[in-house]
Structures are given as structure tokens and as C-alpha cells.
Length: 339
Image (cartoon, rainbow, N blue to C red):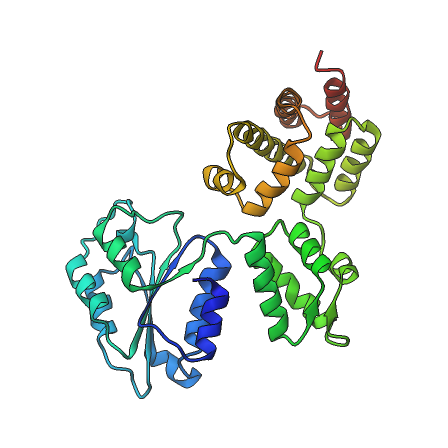
């Protein structure tokens, strides 16, 4: 189930006794918690919401609380963070998994149990994981794909009684590297800005949402690989004028070229966008952009640029020479085939 589906169900008061939020996306994890909290009136939350860290608290304590009746209310919400017993990680605590399994098979009807599993992957070989996934309402909190981001943006904007154009959504995703938490933060500004005419257009996004360092670096890479030395120097100079640190710029360049190389190699082995994102543990939108660029360039050129930037990083750390001068020297060597 997606976050948008959960919100729709909660509006209809369609509640489940057990929710498993599976994945590392912080925005989705936090939004699920906040959404379920709304089930409990604000003046009842102190007594009817319990939060437990399972890296320090045993399951027995949690289950005792879960079986308790609500205090002058209809529901209790029990939030379980860091459920390490669902992973392959080692822990000093001994968990009463039989007791937990008995509970999820016959849960307290007035308790909502939320299991926040902020992990890349649960241990699917474990019986408790298999049983939990069969019983619980599972919410996908993996890094959302572009279509899922668009749905969340449209839902958020609609809740704020605004509208947003398709090209504005595309530009917003581009400028935030598809980071959902950042997208929502930017939407707070954009919906406030659009409160007069209710429409968020491309111009509004370009005016209010700054381009990320990764996006500026991505553009710099495309210019560099096309052999446009003059434009590359100008783009680098603008980053310096914008108070970006040379080492930080170089680190972003190295990271992007490493990704392009990895994507190029795996694409030639037949990897799809989804498989690439899974293998490289990178955001799907970042993989999508990398695939578009990698198709234009040869592996040898990407390798030459990557190694040249590693050498440039060493010089930035060990010499007092002007960073712009060192970058220009890197460009000349790259253009001449590193001869």
C-alpha cells in the first residue's frame, strides 16, 4: 500500500489493528506516524500514545501496553521504532517472538500497532517476517518512483486547496533531486505563494526553489563531457561565486562520475532502471538522469574524467594553488586525452 492509499483509507475511518511501514524514506515513515496520530483526539494523546525503541526495550513491555484499554478514548496507538528482530542484525536483547506472533494473530481491537521498519531490507527468511507481512497492513516506504512522487505532490497541493502544473512538478523534482522530504518543504513555500491564484506554475518553481548542488554539478558534467571548456569554466566559477567550497564541488563531481560509470557498465549488462536503483542503492530519479547521460558518453571518457577528478581532489588538499586554476588544468588535460 502507498502513502496516498493510507490517507484515503483514514479519511473513511478504515483502520487496521497493525501497520508495518517498510523502507528507509524518512518523509513517508514520519507522515504515516502523524497520520495515525490524528485518529486519536489531541487531548487524549498523552495517555493513549506509546513509543518504544526496540533496540533498548523488550517486546514484553510493548505487548503489555498494547493489550491495555484506551484511557477515556476509543483507541491507543503503539509505535515500535527500530524493530531489529525483523532484520539480520544482531542484538543483545532477547525477544519473545512467540508472544509477539500470538498478539498479531489476535490483536487488541482498540489498539493500533505501528511497526516502523526503517531498513533497506527485512530478513524475509524469518518466520516472524513472513507472518507479519501476511497479517499487517504494509505501507511501502522505499524511495518513491517518479510517478509516486507526482501523486504525493498532487495530493499535498490539493489538501492546501491549490493546483500545480505538470511542468512545475517536473522542475520541482529536478531541483530537489527527487528528495521527498525536500519536495514537501518546498511545497510549503509554493502553496503559500500561490494562495492568491491557487496555481503553482513553472515560473513559481524557478523563482522560489533553488537548484541543488547536485543539479548544478550534473549540468556542469554534461557541458564538460561535450568538450565545452569555456562554459565548463564559467559554470565552475558561478558555483565558487555562490560560496560553494571547491572540495565540496569536487566531491559532488566525483560522486556523479562514479555513478555514471557504474550505470554505464551495468546498462551494458542489461540492467533495468529499477534493478540499477536496487543494485546501486540510489534514488530512482537520480538513476533515471544518470541513464540519460550515460547513453551519450563512452566508458573510456567517463573513466578519464573520474580519475582526473580524483587527482584534482588530492591537489586541492595538498597545494595552495587557486582551485579555479587547478580545475582549468584538469579540463585541458581531459580535452587532450590526459596525455
